[in-house]
Image 1 (tube, protein in one colour):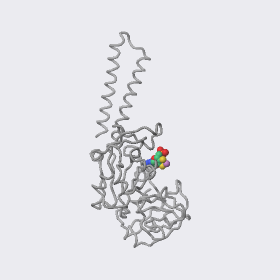
Image 2 (cartoon, protein in one colour):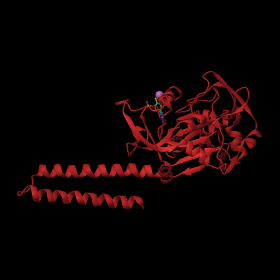
Image 3 (cartoon, protein in one colour):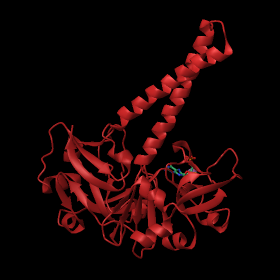
Image 4 (tube, protein in one colour):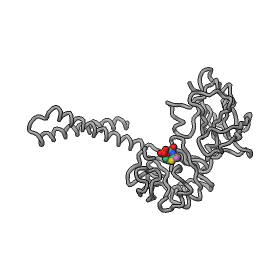
Length: 344
Ligand SMILES: Nc1nc2c(c(=O)[nH]1)N[C@H]1C(S)=C(S)[C@@H](COP(=O)(O)O)O[C@H]1N2
Ligand SMILES: [Mo]
């Protein structure tokens, strides 16, 4: 296991540090070191060791990072790119200011990353827009024409170093604003997405997993349809006024999948962003609420009943009528819904 190797390496590091203390003493002092001196050395060794551990943990986390390329891909399937594959694709350098570098916004950095145009050439089809989704569920949508016209990249490195999580890494969407100042007008700071995990080419087809069944749009269309006219609670890119949403009740989808609602448990909703897939903090809809209240899985919106595009968190989003009893941590207007299950 990697962790065993990791611990072994740490033990070696500590040993080396202890050896260095001995050597330091032999060369630097003929007398016995004082207890205070020993304590200082011990603290230094532990500090150095912790530093090594932290750097390595960061590297290991980075090397596990992946990018899913989804949506209207050439094969119709999503592609999972490993860190190694991303490294190989990261051939483009962009020298630019970092829109989010507060200490000195004028600093020019050398970012190395994967040009989005290359991902589109390799995996894409002709679409108008591409949506980037991050670990924390943040999303932005960019015109394909701009992705083709400018070297907009998913950066893995800044000035030859991996980008720390606190600065937007491991994968950070970077715009060449210094070279092309006009890009600043189109894409402000808020488009520089931190910790990108997914790139949706156009919008994915509906593929909702419920228990061990899968529903596409035509399967959901066959279930009873409901309409909601509400001010939406989604975080971004929806009109601010009342919006019409169409789709199916969570309880009807569960029933169609042959799943009985537990008497006291919950329906667990999993979405695309990793934050919605955290087993330690699941998104729960109490079975009582699902039974009582028309919690909606929306598949269409607006007067034209259009499918919900990735730009708005589609193709499937979760919505709550005002009559639903508020639960702890509400409202959970969740985007990119992918899976329903029962749980505790
Ligand atoms: N993953 C992710 N990226 C993000 C954001 C976010 O919340 N999550 N916020 C955006 C916004 S609105 C801005 S202004 C910049 C800086 O965000 P901060 O002020 O929260 O650091 O990052 C952008 N990228
Ligand atoms: Mo922002």
